[in-house]
Length: 74
Image (cartoon, rainbow, N blue to C red):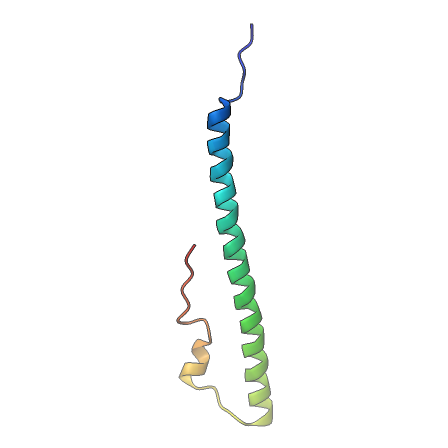
């Protein structure tokens, strides 16, 4: 007689809960990265515009960009 190759239902539920929690963290990290990409695109456009119009030179603070003090926590 063959044994059931699957863990007990209780353990399966624990596994599913863990995986769902990891998906939530991953989705949050993806959302943060997408926000940062959009901010970097805006920052790039602003720098290009300033350089083209001669309104600004790249200063040390501008070179750091909007992400230099950003923390990502999951």
